[in-house]
Amino acid sequence: MEALLRRAQRAGAPAEIMECKGLKVDLASRKTTVDGQDLDLPHKEFELLVTFLRHPGQLLTRPRLARVLWEDDVIVTNNTLTVHIKNLRALLGLYGKCIRTLVHEGYRFDLPE
Image (cartoon, rainbow, N blue to C red; front, side):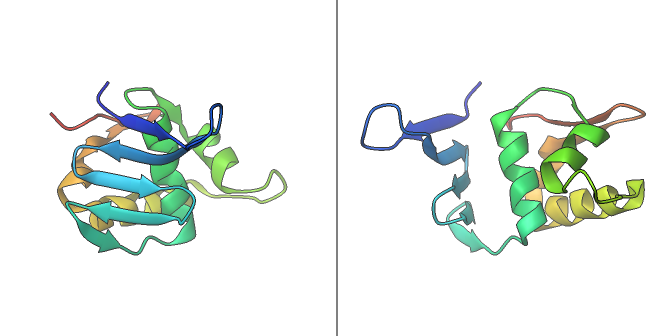
């Protein structure tokens, strides 16, 4: 996979910057850029993108994504997650096409070629 995780200066520190082609996410500053253009992602969409980038090519079920985005005691309808996915796709422009819907299964982030 071509997603590059650059490590912080000190050994053993968690990844600070995630990159996938022209898509760049700085975890420390919560800054996202697409092809060099700053992108202002709402909190839930940012968390979704980070989750997809951490698990490229993997099936992420709707319940798993809901657990990432909401507390256990929050009731989330299918439509709520669908709207956040739709918003993220729109905000990412061409990279939004990397988010694939797997009918009756969930979603997968396919790295751009």
